[in-house]
Amino acid sequence: MSVSVNMDSAIRKMIDDYGVTAACSEFLAQEPGQFINGRFTQGHSSERIDVIEPSTGRLLTSIASGTRADVDDAVAAAHSALHSGPWAEMKPNDRQGLLLRLADLIEKHARTIGEIETLDNGKALGPCIDMDVLGGADLLRYMAGFATKIHGQSRQVSAPGEHVAWTIKEPIGVVGAIVPWNWPFNMAMWKLSAPLAAGCTIVLKPAQQTTLSMLYFARLCEEAGMPPGVFNIVTGKGSTIGNALTAHPDVSKISFTGSTPVGRQVGGASGENLSPVTLELGGKSPMVVFDDADPEAVAAAHRWSVFFNAGQVCSAGSRLYVQRGLYERVLEETVKLAESMKLAPGLDPECDMGPVISSSQYNSIRGYIEQGVAEGAKLVCGGYEVDGDGFFIPPTVLAVEDNRATVMQEEIFGPVQVVMPFDDEEEAIRLANDNIYGLAASVWTQDISRAMRCVNAIEAGTVWVNAHDLVDSAIPFGGFKQSGFGKDMGPEQLDHFLRTKAVWIHI
Ligand code: NAP
Ligand code: MG
Image (cartoon, rainbow, N blue to C red):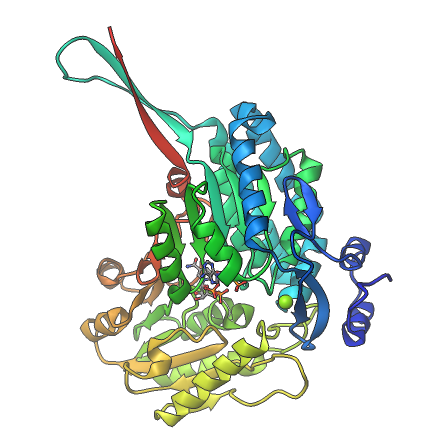
């Protein structure tokens, strides 16, 4: 196979052992640039950023370190495409057709996109293809349908005289989209599907650890016939590119997913710019389990929440509250699941859990486990160091008695479950709400009245009953409290990318 000039031999061997598509090899053999105004370009600086493959800790490739001047070029291209040329003139059904073609191409290239994502991020390939990639195509199709269903309203007015008045919905303008590294492809699809359906143009800044799947996607945009400037990717550091994007006067809307501290900075900069912002931020989502729940179902849910994607899931059910009558049983089932999961590189077909993204994330998670134990938590399973240079953390369970423990309050963003017993419903609701975050929650019970009382009382943007971490293109997702504001997905998201113009005619 041909590989990138820099690729470490350990990664080359892993790729040869597991095998990847020819398209993935060919893509990795090139030095990726940025994607600005329909062209792949290194940009204004020759500086590159190393990209590390997480299961080996070795060099995979490098990416262009974008500059403010690159952001200026990308915004200028997006601004121009918004106001003149083929995209500005495109009819809604043609825009819908373009997005549907793009979704078809994602489906056709799903395996290659998944392989690129797995090598870049470390995640298990099978779920990556099914959820990250095909889930992204599904959202694009869902939003494509709205392109032909955008409409204003005529209104009867009471103002003196004779008038007709109505509203027009217009694309809000150039959208600056900033995404994290935990679901690089999927989060980018969350960010770009609705604005494209609305007729906006986009400058996307992926997280510097994980840009590759989006650069491959840019090729598909070209193949689908997307006009130059409609979708642009600037790669590099958040401190440079993110800041330049949020402060840019020609960016009309910022759509951000990431951590709460960075979200606060992004919100501040957008406020300074008077541009609206959507913030999808961190979480510390409770799972509240009553005595009448099914303990095996609760444990199985961990596979898809706190241990899924190595726990790097914003809505992970990372606080497990169990009523005392079922506590030992749920703990036992959870440990059984944790100890059965196979840690392996994401390309390994038997991988249940890949590595975490980076050495700094690895150190941060290990630091939380140590702090938890130092503060009195009991290490029930996991927590040990895994041999090798990869960033593997085993599924870990900590038991605490105090809800104010750091590991119960802060987002660990790793495969660490923290469990605590409770006595009654009132206490469970109080514990669930005793946190700065309000992204999601789940309630486990067979009692429908109790389930509904909890749904009403828990402060979270999503509440699941007898399930955790279900998402669907039709259902809006977004947090309360310090988990942010605004929604991704569902019809609610489309509104964030439309502005309303009122028109009056005096007769
Ligand atoms: P992060 O550190 O906040 O980074 C997110 C993005 O912001 C990256 O692209 C980053 O760039 C960029 N950035 C950094 N500084 C910036 C600045 N001053 N201005 C503008 N952009 C800036 O988050 P992360 O560590 O990548 O992701 C993990 C976090 O995302 C967790 O807290 C998780 O809960 C949250 N998340 C939330 C949701 C949701 O839907 N609510 C979904 C997924 C993840 P660089 O890193 O390249 O410098
Ligand atoms: Mg990487």
